[in-house]
Length: 251
Image (cartoon, rainbow, N blue to C red):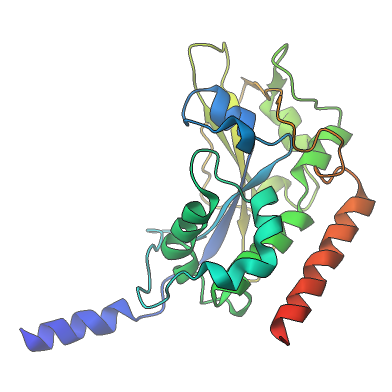
């Protein structure tokens, strides 16, 4: 029995099988308005936010890979403002949500050097988010959130930047309140170099017809600055993240 326990211990420390990553951004109105989450109104945003970065494989997705990699909120202090803004939980305490994402997914992401360690996992995910500004892609294509009409799923896809169109998967919620599916998430497949790739396995449940891209009455991002709706603002935020990353590394 002792030898079996030893083998199990060795297995638990094996490098997880990760063939690609799924990077999910969520639209709070879509997540909350369809009634699938008990959302805290103050946490809703008028721009797309991060749901998570999830190590994945073509067979089964790794989860909770290393119980020795604990969560320490102090490590994330240099990032907490950005995390509160761009990676909020819609329904619970943000720190509790980040802990869940780290233990379930971050501990399996260590196969990629940029994601190894608590700080690197969250900092790199923030940078990926800033590189793929879905809020701006849709807005600049004239796709305005509204409950007054639907868009075709193809319109949503065509609005995305050319380098992520084939990487995109769409998640919708269904509710008797709406005559069509409600767009809730857009998930991008990334390779182990964290670059967009054409997903061999599609994870779309929006059908191929019309979807609602519901309007938000959230106060965050109404001015557009917080919502990263201009390249200038996007560059400022990227520079800010780079600066705190350097400061933290040499602290």
